Amino acid sequence: MPVYLDCNATTPIDPEIEREFLKYVREEFGNAGSRTHEYGARAKQGVQKARDQVAALVNAQRDEIIFTSGATEANNLAILGLREHGDKTGKRHIISTAIEHKAVLEPLEFLGKHGFEITLIGPEPDGAVAPEKIASALRPETLLVSVMHVNNETGIIQPLADIAHALGQHEAFFHVDAAQGFGKIILDLQNPRLDLISVSGHKLYAPKGIGALVVRRRGYGRPPLTPLCFGGGQERGLRPGTLPVALIVALGQAAELAGRDHKKRAERCQQIKAQALAAFLQLGAVTTGDQSKALPSTLNVAIPGLDSEAVMLALKDVVAISNGSACTSQNYTPSHVLTAMSLGEDHIKGALRLSWCHLTEDPPWPELIKAVHSLR
Image (spheres, rainbow, N blue to C red):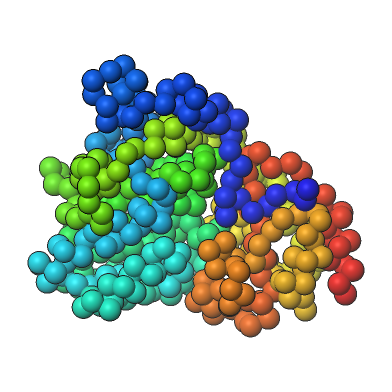
């Protein structure tokens, strides 16, 4: 098999997380809602521990964690869940960015068809959004500001602390899609001005199918979300249904390990990035965005004169890479992220995304260089 370099699409499961997950699949299989016996009690204890583990990583409280099926559902709950409040108060203006994941852009598009006005801020040439442009777009009727933590295509980290500061005393809720940054950059998400944070498990070495929405209080008040589904009352009535205990425990374990090991993981990722940059610079590649603002686990590059599809085909037996988001890469349409960055057509068509993690083995860089050279 080729070396896997598509961790922004999904990560392998960490062995420690897998062990804990399987324990709750095979042994502690009770329903956390069963209150009459020990099986249910032990399942509930596992869920509460996971709530504490996720909360600790973002400096939140246990009851501010709502478990979901992933970041996509969390994004929808955060954005669409404010619709009723916006209608009641007349606050129907939302600010976001042109580089958001479709899991944010499409709910915003839905609201735009139902009376809300959406302002999308484009990125600067370095791939980051300017906080002052967010601030200048604020209005008295602005309900929500939604900005991703780390871009999934470029790896560029967005300046959340500066944006939070720019919001000042404005009452707008601040939502962050942290699918790519949760557990990788710790301090950013502990900022108390971040009202809503979407989390994904399978981007942090847990199984697919689990995530969370952090719903942080302001003083004694919670963001006025309304549920998208009904029936059962679980998760404070915001996300009904039987809790997937094993998946929740896995997410909790992922959060705890991220807090424990993030420095060591980042160092390993930086080693691989240095190797990747050296290899692609030999090929004359051009990087996308300011690498000083990028995750150590992501590299987006374009090789002049070469189409990304041709490069991926040449490398299919060497490394597994992509040319954009796994949610849209099958469409072969120009990346909305790179288009928003005002990059040239050749750069956009040639862009490749490589992403790795601490579990990634050293890629065979000489083979990669040789395979790309064969295209010329």
